[in-house]
Structures are given as C-alpha cells and as structure tokens.
Length: 379
Image (tube, rainbow, N blue to C red):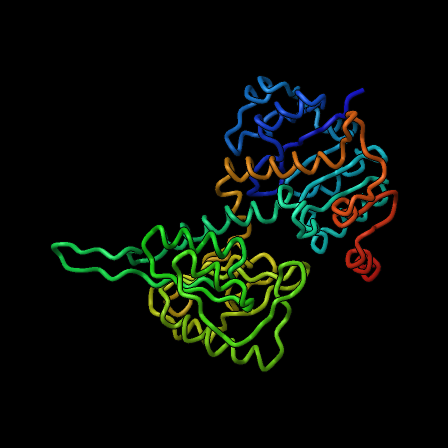
C-alpha cells in the first residue's frame, strides 16, 4: 500500500501558503506516493484544484477524513489544536510548529501518539540545505520587507537626475545579515538605495560587501554555533547601541532581521533612537512576532511614532504566496526523502541526524528538551 500524504488547507488567519504545489505533487505521485489535497488548499497561493488533479492528486472536502487517513500530514502552520484528535496514532506531521507558542497543540500531539517534526529545528548542516524551510521563507521575507518599506517611505529610493533637479538616493540600513538580511540588501540595492548593514558576526561582512553594501564594523566577534550569533556581553551591547544609534538616525529606511531561535528577539532600536530619526523614516521590524527588534513595534500593525512609521509584519512570506509555497514545497519534498525509504515504505526509526534533530514529539514523548521543559512549567 502506498504512503498516503495529506495536505489540508491552512486555516490560520492571513496564511495564504500551501504545503505542496502541483509540480512537487506530480513528482511524488510518480514516485509511488498517494497525495490527497483538501479542496481549495492552494487557492490562496494561486494553485487551483484543477492543477492538483492534473498532477495526480486526489481532492477531498472531508477535512476530518484527510487527517484520519493520512500517513504523513504536511502543513505550513501547526495543525489546529482541536483537530489533532482526528489523527491516528503514529501519524507523522511535518510543518513549522513554533513550539514555544503552540504548547497546547504540542501536548495534544503527544497525547495522540503522533510523530511531529518541526522544520525550524532542522540542523544547519550541508545535507539539510535543501530542506531548510527557514532559509527559503526568510529569502521571500527579506525581499518583501524592502517592498513594504518602499511603499511607506515618502522618498524615492534611487538617485535621479531630472530637469527638476537631482534627487539623492535613500539611505537604507539593514540590521542583521542572515538570509533575510542579505536578500533585503540585494533588493534595496536593486531599487537604487544606498545600503549599509550591520551584523555581530564578522563573517557576514564579506557577504554584505559582495552585494555592494557598506558593512558597519564593530570590533566584536559574536559568531555562535549553528550559524547563529551568540548573545553579546553588556559592554559589547553598549558599543553596539552607540554605533547602531548613529546609523539609525541617518537612515530613511531601517529593516531589522535579528532573531535568536527559541528566544525573544534582541532589542536593537530603542524609543530614543526612533525619536532622533528623520521625519518620514520607516522601520520594518521582521522580528515583530518574537517580540520585536524595535521597542515601539506592535506585531501585525503599522504605527506612527515621532514622524516615523514602524511596521511589525508577522507573516511576510505569505504576502508572496505563489513562490513562497513553491520554495517551501521543494523543502518538504527533500524532507520526505528521509521519511519514505527507497522501497516506498514509511521509515519507522528516526535515527537519521536530521530527523532526530527536528523530531518534536513521538510515541507519547516530547523529544525537544526546551519544549518538554516549557510544557512541564505550564502545568
């Protein structure tokens, strides 16, 4: 009997992405996988039901049966807490889980004896690059952040020489030069802005300069493990604040991208910094959902403070759902290669290093230590 993969429609407000796109469905079906899609699942990302049927998927309007009959359930967001009870024991769920914010769902998955993999827990190793959904979605988010900033900015980004005079290019400051930050730099440069960027990791300087931006130098090496930055000491934070404050004051657009997985986002832009910014300046806080890099950010809202517009988007990839879904779907295709063996059978032992690292729940046990501790504390 072939492995049955189910893709339900996303029901989180504002989520327009879909876990699988028709192109990937076709490849899975050719590989012997049975794919079932909830009707309308791809509508928000402009993949019609007809395209899924043409790719070999079967459509269903019975969401409960889709949950109950799937061997593997694929999603973008974690399944709704109330619907976890529909799963059979040993069903495999793969999605972004945001475990620290979805403890009730994690507890239900544990009690349902399901196995859940959290894509944000994937190890940063070469073999996992094709499955790295955090990076693929950060690429989309970094691009979209610059577009959002340009729409709200009252200035033109490129330098223009016209009969009405010369217009100087806008100054764009990117705080954080990870995947999202680098895409933001590249996009702002394409639009003609003069771009500066800062990251506590010295290694990021070469990447920033290769994109034609100026790298703000601070004599700190905060390279951490897994490609992330370590937390700064108090003295280092003071040096950082001084340099960042000067750059923020001169910028027309500031895009902040600093996130520490599983922790509250570091505070980079204070109220005092905002007060010294130019009238009409724009901040796009890409860490809004995890607490915000700017002190005045309100998640999901645009606020005007001291003449500065502060945007706190919480799901930027969903604003470009067609390609965000396509990239995410390819990540899931690669991940499924670890869950389905060469004979088309489900893997029963999750001892592969990638599976082991991303395994959140299995056989009634929460495997991810921080989540297990958080659940214990929540009782």
